[in-house]
Length: 167
Image (cartoon, rainbow, N blue to C red):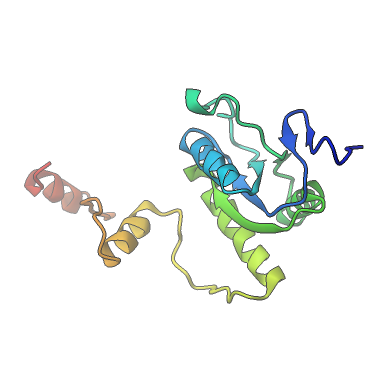
């Protein structure tokens, strides 16, 4: 049991605050976790079943501590229940991908959180957000610098792109 004079447990702040779930927060995802912590939120790490790079932590994040860590369960409903249980009194306000391999689960959880909050409309026909081509096309459409790319199931189109593109 924590006393009011000691709001931490093993160096982790356990006071009630908004919590953000990061799915597979490795590499730059650890840096994202640090930024979320700096902004006053608690951070929960959610590890997918197939993820094996938990030790992929930048030196600058060596002291990073999560409010809690949860492993993906056999199905989505059990996973969400584990996340909700681990959050305790914290309000889950967002779910983000901490690494590319967590994007699909993070998107599904974000939609679930939005439905629970009922303050966002979930659009079922959104493009697949973990598709790199879709991501870059969205970036370009927003007027930002994006990669030059080609997406095709026809090898000749890819070959033409490689031969003609200046890179």
